[in-house]
Length: 139
Image (tube, rainbow, N blue to C red; front, side, top):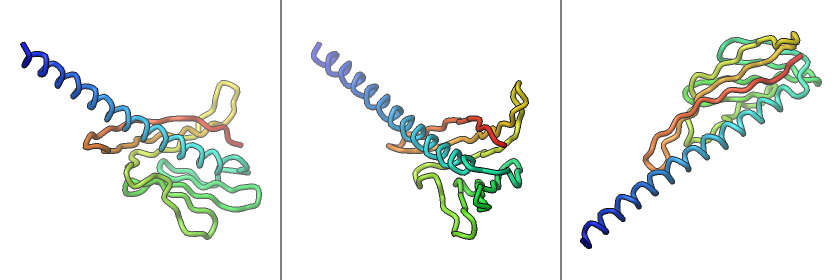
């Protein structure tokens, strides 16, 4: 009888630990995506125009004629401001894949920049991936 109780307790504890690891990974990915979206929003906030757009990179010209470039390479999202060195936006524990930029029009003929990417992390020995997508209004 005692061994059944101990066995059941161990199974319950294992399930709790497993779900905690999954929750931690989900929180890491969500926070990382929010940071990346805030940086993209900053780049677009005072943009005069989208200078160049292809599926994997974006050039934006800001009010002060500064060019902001965003792109994905080797599991990272990079941002470059004017002639400054490029910076990696994601943390080293998170890989970025399938970043894409697409301009679409909404029902009111407003231009939207649709941004998609997949983030992957492997914290606590558990791998987790999640897709993220959002739209930004552009001029």
